[in-house]
Length: 357
Picture (tube, rainbow, N blue to C red):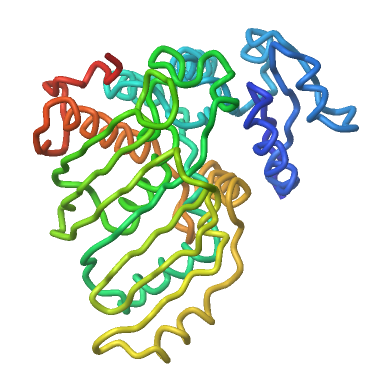
């Protein structure tokens, strides 16, 4: 059995959830350092663990030869700088969403990762759970058939208290609004199961809070395989709900309403046409238990670091992260020009160097 990889978590906000997930995988990872400018906050989530070092000195983390992986859980405007530094110091890097705020920076990180032969992965934990494992199994068994139509609802409740943190709700700090910070996971799931987007149109506005960025949006997608999808986004709902519906020619997959962990909810899979419900149910019954959320994400990452990337629930890649940013860039471009935007986007795209105004 290999020695657990030593990890440093940078940021004690969402880093608290990352820490809990790593602790679910003691044979794969050991969180050795928790770095935050607010040491009191870091101490509050560290628990009674004498082996976990607390520091406010990021450079000391980079200089520590025992740290193999740094996990960046900082505000979005700090992601590029800290990710670049981690790669330059020979660390593998995990970075919370959004990875960076431009396709240019994503491509610069890709060049850096290749140069230093390190893995850089964005965080898309929504991919992991029994529901998504079941849908993947149905697709691989040939029961789903062609994707036809999908609908996504990201209907959450964010009020003034959420935006009391200075960097939130601003282009400079948060880098975007509900399209970027809230619906990005659901859009990643859409592409994971329906494939890449060919073109899209979008509307977005600010109707809920007094902030710089959008908090409502409506987006229409055409996928490369011809399927259609729609995404409805608001931060003005009475409660937080996420609903996903994927319609294939052989079955329809419908999520529950859990907002932050849809793959951990119970989904309904309904057969159609030449596919019988007995076939669907038999396939579902054979799906083994899998890790969910951040635990599933880090388990898949450990497999990739160990050179076993072919297992079910394969790790998120830097290419997945770039695709999510390409989608964000295209959405903002469509909103500002009132035009249908074609994908993929290259260096000649008007928003290649960033979507912030």
